[in-house]
Each structure stands twice: as structure tokens, then as C-alpha cells.
Length: 438
Image (cartoon, rainbow, N blue to C red; front, top):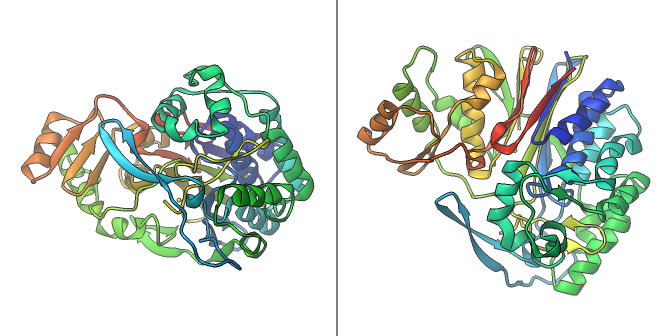
């Protein structure tokens, strides 16, 4: 079986197109990620950072790929740049962020895609850019979740050049409106011609340095020429009889997995308390994330997660590429590959991923059922819960000493999971995700 799951139907379609042409899981992940940099620019972009994990069926080896943003400033005197402080509403929650040109770190996504393609791809690089380029030449319909996110992020997304993209004619794009980003056409054409290093040493890289010079940013020419994505061995641990291979660091998923008791057979209140207990440690805030999960017909699997943070509010003029604000994830399981899953959602990605993976591997749910099920997310002594959890579950959490905040609708605050298994796949409706089984 071949399958791809992603945060937008157009992203999933791009990966499926490449799989149908005989591309590997790496080829499909590259094409889908590039497509997400057109279809999901409220959530991510080419000039962000990321992380991947690739399972090679022939060798049985999984490797992590680190292409997160790097701290800038090589070859320059250290200096500070003023940032714009913002409080962004997530439902009733206010999350503090800092944006502006000084929040931009050295992009890692292009180098990560380069490493993934060079080591595990088979199709020509320009072919992998084509689905994204086709999207950029037209327009993408704004899904409900993206329109909701855009409303939250309006102060950032409509700063500077972003106003013309996301608020054409002074009216913010809404669900069903067409997102047009004509500057992405020359950006992607140059990426197809120059190769992925063009984002560092070609026309995109030159435009990025020019904007840094104009607005006083920190990224230097030395930063761009020296940046490299890095492969490393994953963290390995056992989970319900399966070998779990994941990353340490930002997601802290291994620690949460180790704390999680068996869920199968528990009533919903007991299950909720067990999950909250496993997830109590808090993570640094982050937004604007998406992910792609792919399995090809050879059994290779790839998960690739990318993020801009919120986005700095600065766009490369004429190229419509939003800079990251990272100075202000993805996982694989298997005996062979049983499941490949990735999540988006900043501090909530660990909660979302753990609930879905435990639902499939522990509680034996179908992928879409596990993704659709109501979620919870603990933040200290406050537990956010989606509608659908019972009054008995809420009472059990309160009796255990937690304050419970019940949301009145399913929301992208609770993360977005893309998952593929040996016989199924699921995208997350919270972010208008989609899956394609071939």
C-alpha cells in the first residue's frame, strides 16, 4: 500500500502524484512539503525550520534529519535587534510571541529537503517542485481551519508585504476565498533551476540577504553558505510491543511515552487522567506548523514536519516568501513500518501525537477514528478539553485537582496529526488535513 497524509488536500495530492509516478517516500515527502509551502502558508513556509525521520525498508534503519533553524550572526559583530511583542489569542488563551526581522533565524527547510532527496530520492529535483509550482500559478482555496488561524495571526500575516497576500483590497481572506501568491512562481522556478541550495546561495538567498541589510536583520552570508542539515540516529524505545523510533529534544515525546500506562480497557475518566499524567511537563510555545507522513510501495516511510513559528511579518519582496520567527516535529514506529505519524501544533503537538499513536497501537483504533477522537491538553494545572469528553471525565480531572477549560468546538489549538499505517491513513479535520491511499 502507498499512502500520504498531510495538513491540506493539495499537499496530500502533491505527494500522491509523486507516489503514482514511482517516487519514493522521500520524493513524495519533498514534493508534498514544497506544496505545503504554497497551500499552507498560514502554517508554514520554505524559509522555516523542520525535522524529518526516514525509515529505509531495505536496511531496516531509521534516521532523524535535523533541519531546524540556526542562530544567525556568523562573521558579524553580535548585536541586538528590537522585536515586536504580540499576544495571540488561541480561543480564550493568549499566547505571547515576538516577531519582526530580528526574530528570523537561518532557514533549514531547503537544506533538509536537499538532504532527504539526495540520500533517498530517485526522481529529478525539478519534477518534485512541479506540483508546488502548479499550485502557485493558480490559487488555493482557504479551508476553514486556515481562515480561522489567519484571523488569529492577522497582525503578523498582514504586516508589510503580507497585507497584499492575505488581505487583498483591505479584506482579510476567509473560508472559501482564493489565496493567491504570484511571487511564489518565480521563487519556485528559481528553486527548480538552482536546486535546493538556491535558497542559500542562489537568487532566493540573495534576496534574503538584501532584506536583512535593508531592515536590520541578523542572518549573514556566512550563515547561509555554512548551513547544513544533519542526519542522526533516532531515540529508540518500546511501546506496547512495537519499536518506537523518534527524536529527543523539542517534542519530548519519549518521556511522555515512558510515563504512559496501558490505556486499553480503561474507562474514559481513567484514560484522561493517565494521559494528563504522562503529558504534564510543558514545552516552549510555537505556532505555524505542518507535517507530511508517507509510506511507499517498498515499505519506506518518511515523516517531515516544518514550521515558521508565527512568521516574522517580513516577506521577500516579489517572491512572497515569509521569513520565520523562530528566534522569538515527527515520529516513526514499526516492525517494518506499522505506523508513520507526525504532528503540528507547538506545545500541543506532543499531546496530539501521543493520543493518536496510543489510540492506534494501544487501543486498536482505526487511524481516522484515533485522529477524530476528542483531545485534551494539560498546561500545568489547567487542562484544555475538546467537546465530546464526558461530564464524568471532566469531574474526574477536577477531583484530581485540575482546573478544566472546556472548549465549545473542535479547534486547531489541539494540534494536527497526519498518520499512515499499513492499511489506512488519516488527515486531521482540525486543520483541514487530508489523506490519499493509492
